[in-house]
Image 1 (tube, rainbow, N blue to C red):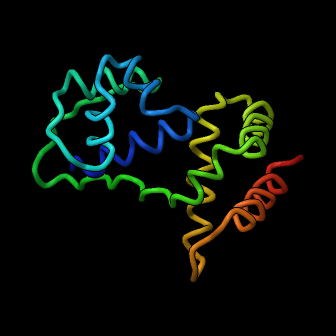
Image 2: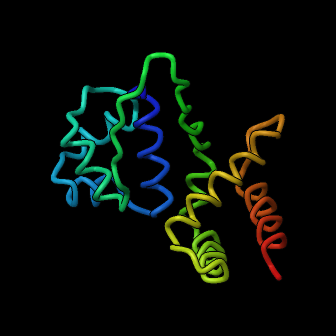
Length: 147
């Protein structure tokens, strides 16, 4: 996996959990600049640092040696800044919690799934999306998950 893809995955997981870089750094025993650089695709992290960061984010690191001809799984695309900002809103948190409860799944997992779904819908737009757009996309997600 490329360092850029790893950084993107960590940022998505961290923002889905509603965590700051500082809080994750404290839990992982790493510095804020170290994690910020990693999330931005810079640096050369050790396996130990990546493992500590994964644990701080409630994830499990799986290391696999694969043959050279095996296809590489691509990391998810980075989330738009406007969506990341929207994900910090009370409404997003409330709806993600309701969806998690209804699906009997962990809230962090639901937040991450919801962010990816919203980003996917947002990628269809022909212009940058703003907060009202994210509200409409969240409305669609809420309506489709209600019984």
